[in-house]
Image 1 (cartoon, rainbow, N blue to C red):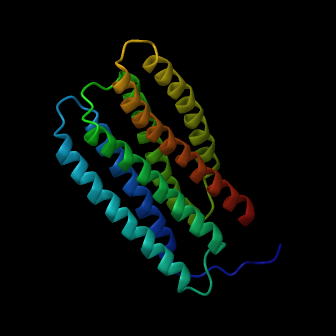
Image 2: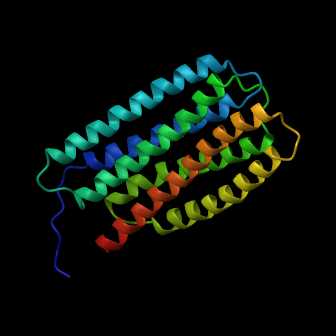
Length: 205
């Protein structure tokens, strides 16, 4: 294989890393939202600001791609990665917003388990983004995120079964199911990001 020219500009990797760090912040806010003592209106406000900041980073990344002649890897993959990271933040923001808007009083413990999965996925993703620069130490990342996504799927099924067990009132079932679906979407989003990283690594190997 011939040598590939790689631009010196590292800002793409910096922006992707910043986007992933926003997800760590979002997952922390989501965990705070599930606390019994949380000021939920305050947490939701901070999540909205975090989501807005994440959007700004995504827009900055897109502008950078559009204004750069040679990108470190396929621009379509950069778009996909940036969009995937942004989608995860949107799903976490949605979960927080639903808890506030629905005035959910009691949250099943299994939801906290899902948020723990999200926090771990966020940490792994933030740690992996800088490694795109050298395409090193990435395989363990996408394998572990896929494992976590499978665990999240199983936990999601348990949550839904619990909601339909008769323990909850119908209106609470509907509210909590929406929250659970948003968490599931966020976990699925992390897997999509990991899959994109794997595809990039394979192309660049």
